[in-house]
Amino acid sequence: MTTVPTSEQPAPQILAEEPDPKRWVALSIIAIAQLMIVVDGSIVNIALPSAQKALHISNADRQWVVTAYTLAFGGLLLLGGRIADYVGRKRIFVIGLLGFAAASAVGGLAVDSAMLFGARALQGMFAALMAPAALSLLTVTFTDPEERAKAFGVYGAIAGGGLAIGLILGGILTEFASWRWCLLVNVPIGIVTSLAAFRVVHESKAEGDTHYDLPGAITVTAGLTSLVYGMTKAGTDGWGSTTALAFLVAAAVLLVVFVLIERRTPHPLLPLRVVTERNRAGAFLTSLIIGAALFGLFLFLTYYLQGTRHYSALRSGLAFLPLSVGIVASAAGASFLLTRLPPRLIMAIGTILTGLGLLWFTQIGVHTSYVAHILPSEILMSMGLGLVFVPISSVGLFGIDDRDAGVASALVNATQQVGGSIGTALLNTIAASALSSYLASHLGKGHHIASVVTSITAKADVHSYTTAFSVSAGFVALALIVTLVLINARTEDVPSEGAIGL
Image (cartoon, rainbow, N blue to C red):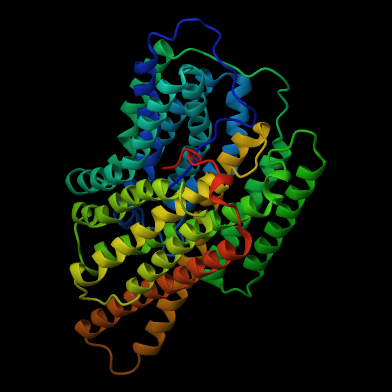
């Protein structure tokens, strides 16, 4: 579930007396672009086991297929919104579309892991340009409040359904064509959509200061990348290794420098006043933690279904559907509850249900029944996640000034993407360590028969996944504590519409 920004400042209104006659066509173009971004997350998860095997990617490095994208997307999202506002939203939207398509082509044609990781990072960079430009274009294209509400409703529905579409499409393409087509499919869609946008969508810009906080963007992205790489090296070399410690220390230094830059620059990428209010801080921190737990779930459950249970890619995608559909349904219920109950109560219930679902996942085995274990876990988690995501988006806008509304909305998405990056790297490292420990303690003397080794290896894989799920449940417990301690906003204090969430 993600959230995209409008801009750091309120978007200007179109001055034309008559509404844009092509506005509904423009909506369809913008919706397709947003669908590409949303689908890309789930479609790649389903294709990841096949891509890892084809490109001989190690277990320690496989998480970069996910984190290279989320780091670039989350780290550059705020900067992307400002660039779109001041360079031109249509121009940046088209550039983002074409760049995303080109990066997808590089990834689909990758001959080794480095090429794939680089392509995924480029996808994230161009998505960070495209996503905020798309939402800003909706804002300035639909000036009538009633029509704008309908447009955002369509946009939100597309975003919400994109997860399920990606799961099914990823399974179909991986099983009947190749994992490469999970990336290559973006190429024709991106080209056609960009040509249509060039002809239909009107250009718009924000007036005023056009300074960009490039030092802030560089230091925060470099710091987060160093943090993830340090965790990855800890998985292969140990937490006490010189390389791992060097990157972790560098990450700490870079992130401190980022905060110092934001305190002193007159045009901060992230005005610190946005995150110092307790309710908003609680929302952003909860988003970060839940993102860490959720991204790890998708990664390890995919490997469990395809590697241990030997599901096909398509069957694996279908197995995830109750989770994605349930989140959308639960989010609709949360929107209704948000006008009647305090957001802290809704979020607390949501985190408890999510944690229970993750704990249920820790009970899986090599021959676990989908109906008895996986489906109930997905239902619990989907109910919980919808109840968490909607209040987070609203509380993230609690008491915010108009000038900061865009950056606050963007930060809900950015924190979730960054949390997903950090969580995926950390959980992958923990899972790899659990796998090694299990194999070392069980593959002793006398275990030389192939069938016995295969059985122990399968159990070791499951042990690594359940260990990751246990840590994810711990993340959710931490999110519950943050919610109860920091969030005290009343029902009438938060905007019921929240940010635009996926």
